[in-house]
Length: 437
Ligand code: SF4
Image (cartoon, rainbow, N blue to C red; front, side):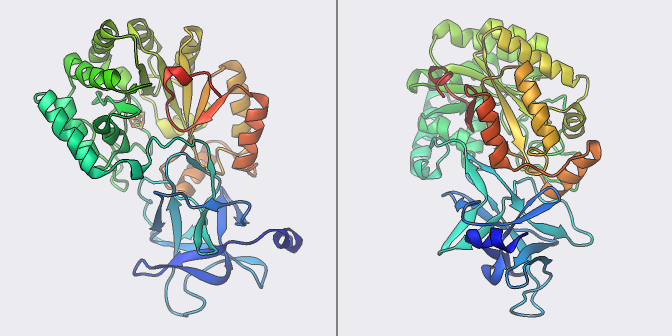
């Protein structure tokens, strides 16, 4: 790193944690962002004020990589240089929805380290009395802004829905999502705003390394329980119609964090969509899916499904297979689903699971450009991958070699330049906004 480069911009101070979990800044050291095997000192220009709703995490069994300003070099610190003998740990930011990570927190693993829990670990520093996050704003909408989700209003909605649909098990399940897991999508159903979730499927034909609803790896804990029953078409349509008939520009979505893949529950979803569409043409019926079953998807489009969001960690088969571990389907089925959806003039997003170092590697960037040329999708939802970032990078690098990353900001700008009509964001849009850029 050239000194002249660093002088031009203001370095952001490193933040670390002590064994009690107290977080503090480290004078004389700049925060560092990690992207694959590359490190970069964080500056004002590379960061934003940490957005409201984000959380800071101490990373156990790991040592922070920081930038020693006076010595002009990266250092891995095991203990506090200002209080010798006191162990220190890296700190990362879990940023609020709408922000995509440009760098992850820089650290090295200590011997015997376990997997990090299923979150994203953004780089963070301190400047002018504020935390600064290495993140890029991709969606300004306040759909999941916790300030607008007052618990007393959620409870009022819960009581109202209990009265309206006392025997509906899906309504009861969403109560648990909203109140126990604090799921913003679940809360929005009870608040009557934006997008309501319709979790339905108990099963999945993928085994994603970072699946948040089911883990067979006992070293990784799933963060929520998968739905334990299959709602009936009547239960699904009752919840969906309640939302659609009440909310302007409403969206109802199959395929949530607390279920498997909805394509494996088409036997109840198809009749539910038929009931919804026979009652109203309003509202957007969306499905978040792995896109593994093109024939099933066709049937759902026939019934009235409006849009899909297909999850992809990579558009390169080797990396896709390594992360999704598909069983009984192939990456070509996912491509076929996208092709069919585009051919049928349905709105298609990809849920592009971002991890700096892999997503912005030249190999992935070039493959993504080729992919969008071949499959002219309408939107990229830039989502942060919730998985141990260093282990993910190493796993992906074994699946397919990655050269030095180009930088997240750079690839976002370049892709937009090549495809100006491609929508960027974080949330599923309602059909009224499908083609608004
Ligand atoms: S596709 Fe979704 S539900 Fe299926 S394993 Fe992956 S994350 Fe889990």
